[in-house]
Length: 282
Ligand code: SF4
Image 1 (cartoon, rainbow, N blue to C red):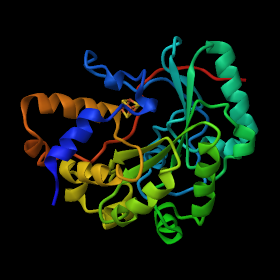
Image 2 (cartoon, rainbow, N blue to C red):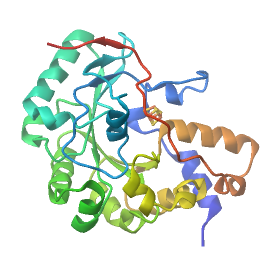
Image 3 (tube, rainbow, N blue to C red):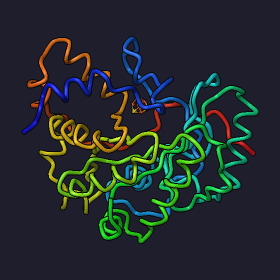
């Protein structure tokens, strides 16, 4: 039985994910917010995830070239929104972090990674936030979703990074694909600082996902929030800051029962970089 009062309480108390602080997405005064700056290393990746937007961008020719995108007065920089940064090796990523700090001074550096190539002993606490994707709670499901047998390595990276820096486990909510795995993922994430639960974006180019996914449930805000609520018993659950902001403004006019019935459009168009390319580090 879903307890709507409890879900409402969770939404009122939930903090923004640390990664979303300084992003325009949580500033209600900005009409068309864009993600905070990123440094793109490569669009290449060692996994082949069934839901990946970076892969779609590569197919469509919209994947960004390497370099820095966004304002030259950043408060936070993400490495990187496309591809897997550690394809170039942990030493190289550390070198890039240090150069970005040299150039911009006080800046938060967030890394988005699948965690299977990074060497925690070399990365140490160089990054302020490490966000590691984990979309399965078992080796079999991980293989089905990513096309690789690297579940244990991803989990080990989470465990090691959690003792070194602020660590976020990032999980895409995919009804009929990984909903049965969420509790196990939350167990792994319980040692991390946050479990960042993300709604799914579906791209028609990701054919395997289209065969497996329950579109209607993926579009249901109610299903998504129920999952977030359930997992919050095990891990420090966060949802995307921009979504939380919109939900809170919806709840100023409507009640929680209405919110649970809202459907979002899960289908995305070609992913494009929304910020301008500025430079590439040598
Ligand atoms: S989830 Fe939304 S608010 Fe958070 S960093 Fe991404 S775009 Fe910004």
